[in-house]
Image (cartoon, rainbow, N blue to C red; front, side, top):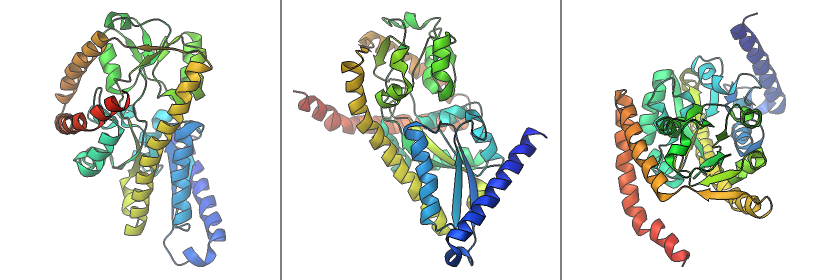
Length: 362
């Protein structure tokens, strides 16, 4: 039996079971209505904030719709591999996927911009750009080319700079490292001679333990503590210049999306908006406790990148972004729009967040 046939048979059985279960639970509500059953796949593990949050989206849509839209979620490697999610939703084998756009950069260089750019927009600014700027329009413009509908569905907030087993005193220390860093940040490190490796979350700790990679960036204190990175790496660097506010996404097969009525579409949209806000809030809250625990209980060596290192990383980032922007019209448009919005956001934040935080620290 081929892999594709096996997946289709498995998903067919899941679909039949879900519909029968929904009918038994709500016999008087959905009997006369059109019912939809979706199979969702995620690029993330079941454990942790992202696994729980994306499960919550699926469960709430199923519950609130009274079974009109039943969604069964398979986490990474439960049905397909973490990096296969995009393909099976694009093809229509599954209907809904969760990930972060930079995982699919091989499909189009422009997609990486939607996760965020080095020294780019923070979580609040990303949401503002998507919902009240040009972000959603441009994201759909790209994803529609792949038979997909795009929704922001979470944000990590500002991340940490990564875990290393040697000190990074200058940019030259990146040379020769085998380091996990996805997205455009990884492309910046490549320019300094880093051997950048893309690995799903479940493979990160084994890869460091075995020496396959020398270190990794992951997310932030809460997620990093849960993964146990403090047990296998010596130095924890900050700030997270590469991912100041990383977008997490939901992507939907366009054919499946078109079959939903307006109420169900609105429900999916609102569920993703709720998740976008909640994930960002949960990461922030949990990071507050986790960073203290890492420092006080585990005596982690927190190290700040030097000002010169950050300045050179910023210069290299600008060059990498320009190079990516030259690859196609989508990339150029996204690059220009993000930089335009960043300039406006920085002008406002200089009068608000920046000086307020400085004043609060007095």
